[in-house]
Length: 540
Image 1 (tube, rainbow, N blue to C red):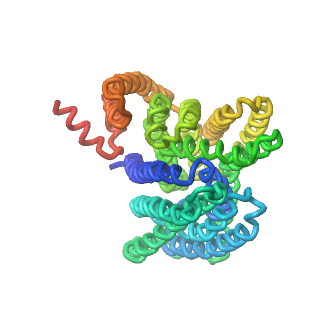
Image 2: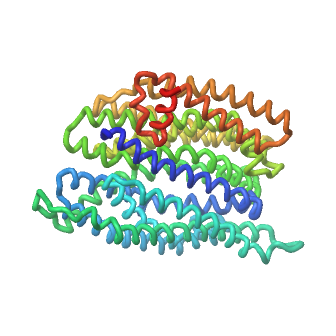
Image 3: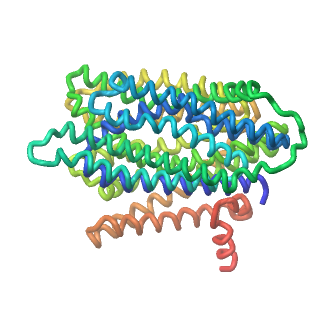
């Protein structure tokens, strides 16, 4: 198996775990939403957005940075330096994460609306734990194994789902009677959901620590070919030099969520809309549309994380052919999944929402938002991949610059659209949020590609990366829509027609992909299970 296939295989393992995690997330959000309501979702999402921003600043970029630094040392066979980087990174995140968690707890009433304070404070210890988890995941990814990261993510989400539902029920139990305070019910339910997030991160940390002492330490039981060992100060400076621009670029890139939330609450509140109504609407957007949109985007995050060691190593060795091949294969496989996912979400938005989030008063609003914003999955996926590539080749400042420019345009666009929206059409504000998100991610795709073309002369192969998946997805979309309508008309049920139409869509799509790749099937071999599929087709 060559390097590019190894990247795809490792990324596919991580992507599969990421998609499983997102599916679990979607499934448990359904009963949780039924329990705490759209308002509780809104309170939780508001707290979670602030928590995410603090996490971005304190430790979110640690896996990428540690993976890059350690993989570069491993290529140079400086194993002692690689291990020292790992230990220094643990000290770094313990200090930074601890301070960030303490400040977030103290400042919670000033960072979020009243109903979200309880949830944010419960999330604070998770900020500290997440940094340690990030270092361990970065360590394993640098050694070109995504198995431990994948398993930890699945365990994290399983515990998150179970504890979230249990804790939410316990917290809202006193407010289930007649005449109970619904605001307190929503706030307490959001706190229970936040407790699940923390429990998930804790179990992931326990698993990764056990894995490190059981298997991980043997990875560095090798003899250095380069006897030089950097000082702790030198390593800390290296970490800061890598982490700081990645923190800023990642922070600004993801700042759009918090800014959208602030603009939405601020401008609509100034126009006389109550905080409770805004929390309910934002709960539909963030707790339904964003949750579903992020399911396929998990692949892009996985591909980005898994490709960092190979891309960083090729760049460090000045192997331009290997570098370009790794980039092309990473992007091509990502688009091969994200494009049909976007089409599927758009075509089946109503039955998907009806099955997972059957709240009658908001189902049409949620499904239309998903249909309008489904394309954001493609744009966010591609921009996430290109961000990771630029960071891996030592140009983390470029995603930062591109994100700042895109954010400025986005803020102006969102403010103008929300101000111009008549209050009687308040529900349309969610469509505007989805459109604004898509435009923001599209800007990042364009500017990042421009940067890659200038730095390493890389150009997208439009046919392989975009046109083939788009043609196959278009045919798939027509078939899926027709199959669902036919089966629903016959059964008047949602679940069986939805599952059957999705299965038909997968078969049609990959049959077309294999047809288009005829003669170049080796480009598909890194995808798990594809070898058996191709072998069966050849026998037929």
